[in-house]
Amino acid sequence: MRCGRSFAACAAGLVALTGCHAPAPGQCPGDPIGTLHLQGQLVDEPGRCAFSIDRSGDPVTVQTALDFTATLASAADGTAWLCPYKAEATALQGSRTGDHFLVSSLPPAATAQAPPCACTVVVTEEVEGDLQLGPDGNTFVGELRNALSVGDGVDPNTCEPANPPTSATAASSCGVSATPCLIRWTLTTVQ
Image (cartoon, rainbow, N blue to C red):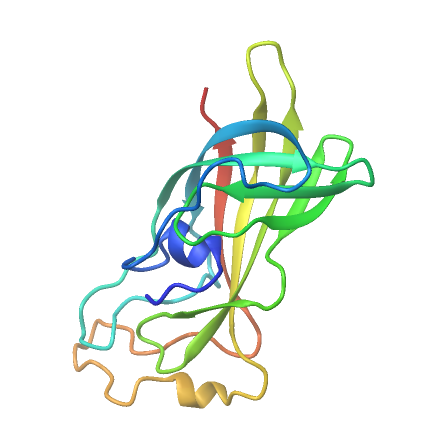
């Protein structure tokens, strides 16, 4: 996978990751609320993006477990940021209402080469959840969502592989269209 600006494309490991660099901690806008060690588990559900093989016919899997550290920050006007310390990740920005956070990737959208797709895939990322402040540490429970779609003006049919694998059991479809397919992970803090 070629990494763009997306935390998910590089950090969550939609497919094999190469050539990415991690940002330094402490570069998060706003007033830091805390640094969270988060773990995630893939939500396996119908309608999830259907990547299963790459262009060479090798298996490709979506990363089922996540483990990363991020700073959660906010401003007095309700703006919130989640700043992961992961490869090529940029801050996700959104809103805070009380203890509820909804942050997402900012335009321009991240792009990735996601096998078996023959086109560049647009990745929109969102984290939503609730923070509980406590004397023994902060806890966050929520979800990381990646919506993958083709870019504006791209014919989804051009994303299908030109030479699909011959294995009868291998899915040969890119599975990404103008309507985003979704990959979700549950997120919780680890103390």
